[in-house]
Amino acid sequence: MPMLMSIEGKQQQQPHRCKMNNSIGRMARLLMAHVGSNKSGGSKMRLLLLCSLTVSFSLFLLFLASRSLSSHHPPLSPLPGKGYTVVINTWKRNDLLKKSIAHYATCAGVDAIHVVWSEPDLPQSSLIDSLKKVVRSKSKGNREIEIKFDVNHEDSLNNRFKEMKDLRTDAIYSIDDDVITPCSSLEFAYTVWNSAPSSMVGFVPRMHWLRDPTETCMEEQYVYGGWWSVWWSGTYSMVLSKAAFFHKQYLTIYTNQMLPSIRDYTTKNRNCEDIAMSFLVANVTGSPPIWVEGKIHEIGSTGISSLGGHSARRSKCVNDFAAIYGTMPLVPTSVKAVDSRSKWFW
View 1: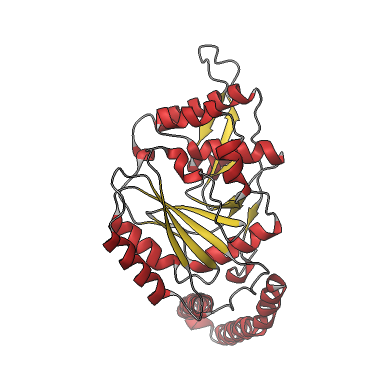
View 2 (view 1 turned 180 degrees about the horizontal axis):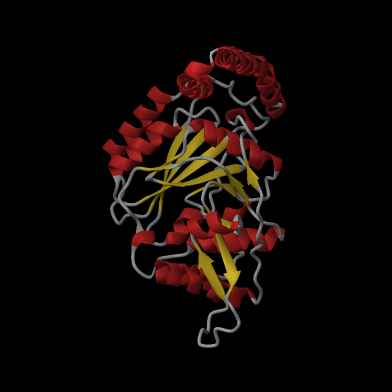
């Protein structure tokens, strides 16, 4: 229902815009009438008319912008269930971890925060205590957000998808320690996930496509496409787990049922665990993921995606995983979920 309410809100604002348009029209008609009665000063008046219309139109645009910026839409209605668990993957960046946890503790739907810890040394008690204090101070209302460190003794990218048997929610929000998702965007994405809980729902879309068969010198069948490929084509087939919702059942499947060769592959290559999860969900559901429009903020240093050869390595992962599965489970789509409450035109 919140989407319908937002549409009604926009319709009620139309009369204000009509008043502005009528005022501009009256001004133009008066000036034109004056020009017609004073032919000798026609050139000057035409110039004055042009300037007046330009100023009026500029003021009108400022009026629309001010209303858009100043509008505060109500929060989404709470959904049944216990909210979601934020699972943060971290590696030797305690300063970013503190910022990330301090932010997510303020989001209304967060039930628990799990920190995936794969460092050789155990987390210091001082770090754990300080984070618990931060969560208590940032939590709103009477909520008691659980914070827990999931300590792993092996350094593997698969740790971020290791089975968690003590989760209190079905929904998982997987996030990197250097990525901040605004609470409003996060709550909207959660409503989208609730409408399709078997899907991956996220903010970072990526795609794959078949290589041109005429390129006979190329052995790889598929190409991995980054953000600019998605922007250009309007199509995607994956959402990356650096900022995505999925059901907790996929942690169990990834740990216990997915082919061990894929987990071994990601551990050895230290890459593509997010592609492996996209393959897994697509193979289970036979459906595409859902891209949610929204900005995320990266607060850390540039990651491995900026290194040379990144796209080539990712393309190799896509081809190798498809070979292991014996098929290509990824499903392309052009659907995007948009929160209409923040849009003037949609």
